[in-house]
Image (cartoon, rainbow, N blue to C red; front, side, top):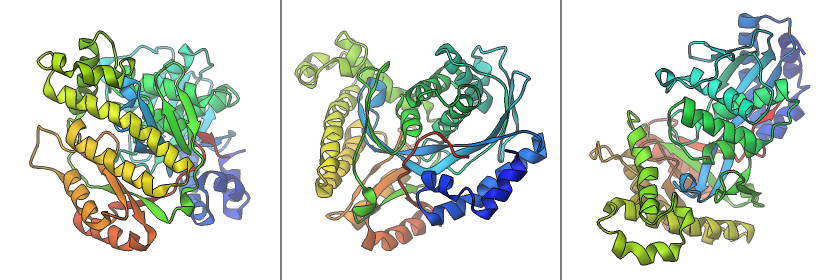
Length: 426
């Protein structure tokens, strides 16, 4: 179907059912229509109206529990959200990917050269090349396409804007060249490969997997080749709570070393015990070995390893609480996760800029407002960015107004848990 034909059908309501399958409710569907139409119009402007196009989407994700555990083969609980990256895409015969993101310069990637290049670390074109290279390595067909994309996943928010973009690219290639048959796990792995090898950012698999798989999902990364993925049966809409992400608008400049240090220090403990990652060592073995580890690794590494083991247990407890519809226990577990991140994992502010502590301030205010009735924790990679809060609906207005007053209007985002991951929408 041509872009102009799709625009007319969106305006007439002909695709409301397809949009609702992704965006959950009628209000959200109506809010999405202008966004899709604008992206279709941009495609027409850049590439013409003479080809059939697809509309695709990949969500941001929220980490529910399991902060900084995935990169040491740990356990996580996450969920896809209603903020997403979308694409209008069509095949071309040039073996070149032309991609134009709203607000950014166009990218042009020649698929005849799929080698990583450090000169392109940190650039969107490197992500595009890396996803294509990863999927080719897994044995799938790749090819050129023209695409216009846009995203409302806030950058630096802990909602994984880069993972949403990577998964979106993998979803485009899946549907344009593989009849939609590339499974969600493979797309996530190709996206992580792109981020690590081509984009130059060390990261675990959580962000990409939660975006690709969708809904509430628990992932056990004991085997990174075959992670155990399980969707969690819990209807959050009936809990009486809202999920809030508060963007504190902190300084994100040059945090790569902070993120890398978390993983590196956890792995330094494992290596001191003759293994590669902490998951290869039992909790009892680690705690029993602490006297021998002191002096072999730095003290913060031991604290971060302690966080890893206890956080894995909390993930299991949180899943049990949700499946048992015990939301009070779930809230307590989430708050304990937050305190562990603050005290032991130490990813709430960067030691390179200790006087700027916007995440700490947001957590402090959340405790004042929610203690005894809600939950709060650092969200995502940490050091700057966002916190997460589970807020009783009867306290939501007060919480949102307070956070917006402190961090700026629109800083508190009330989210919907999205039922699908990377998907072809139309």
